[in-house]
Image 1 (cartoon, rainbow over the protein chains, first blue to last red):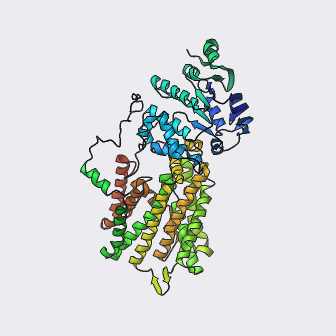
Image 2: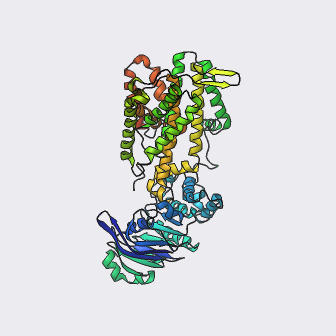
Image 3: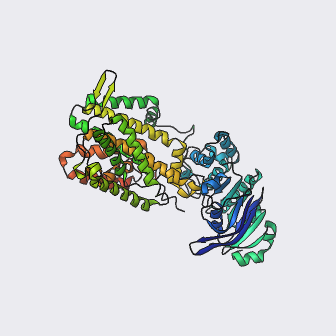
Length: 237
Length: 348
């Protein structure tokens, strides 16, 4: 589905990604793990076209997307859940959801009300908060809203940047349960995470990124057992 | 809620807006009965506005009221860029000047009727909006403000120096009053009462345009850009297109006000469009609450009307206005009717 091949990205003279190759297949949860400044967020930004590649290519559904403007990439069906949720603070929950559906605004076959109902099936709490400003939601609810907003776009794939950031351990568990639920709808998910154990426990496959390079790639099970290597590269647990 | 409540990290998710248990105070119920969304409230307001010239007899007072209306149009136009899209524009007077000069030149040199110069002026303003919006797409916040400041100065300097077109600092005098020729009817708009109805028409048009824009998809996109530009981009919004559109829309409304100004003053000169003018226009939506249409209207009434009421106090009144603005910014930084700012809570 999504394929990054030999991607290198620079911020001015600084090389942020070096020869990164990542693949996400259909119905898969793939996680990208790494410590601070390892290039996780840059990978996200490269997929979304916010940062341009210097070499290599990004393919989505068999077509090249690198070099395209962000809004075109998003319209192709990649929906992002940005880092730290970043919901629209002073827009109501409903408006936030409508923003998620923005790419379908000229699509006559798209029924925004029906799509919202679908989202409420996953997150019934949001229904009673429709008219509230996004900022008045709690951290967990904001995360739900951010995921719902991504779902409103009827995405072919969801990319998430650190969904566990700034949430209590209990909430982190819930968020990962939600990710699994969303995956069961049939949407492949690419998660960028620091929380290694949690992420690997729900993922099918994982990549480990260090200093802009992929240093390991394996099934999530194998990665979880391979604690030695993880210790070396992430320096935790 | 059947699910157990999630723990609350950022705090403040307890606010419930509806619910059968909530007892509403009579005052709240009163404001609901006369809410702006009710059709009869709108009708009452429009009717009251139509009656003003029959109640107010002094020419001076009418002049002040006309100025308030003029600034309502200007401020609502600016509110599109600043309040909806969240871009700082310190050069709104440039668009105002564009409309005024377009009407003035077309009417005096080419004899084109006022009613035609209004849409032409708006198109010219729209084009100017595109012109400033397009190259500044990538700029943010203060950088954009600098560019708009510069643009305002450019228009002022061009108007001051292009002698063959604008007559420079001498200005364009004796702009004819607009007239309506409808079969045998021949109405010349040259009394305060007539001017008032003309500007009232423009105000209503502007308010309507702003409400429609705000409630549309485009308005939603603008507000998303205001809240978080980066996320708006990854939601599929073409930032450049919507920002430019916002500038152009705002500029067209500014030009509309300019056209009226030209025929009302019967004289335009560059001195009416200095940076000070832009600053006055900026204070109105900020005072009234960025993004709020009724707030901006109230802001214009306060900013233009109140200094006139206290004209007897001569220069001291400006001190009072200054002090008032400082107090506003301390106690109500979001403006009279603006949405609350969340900067303190929303730190990432």
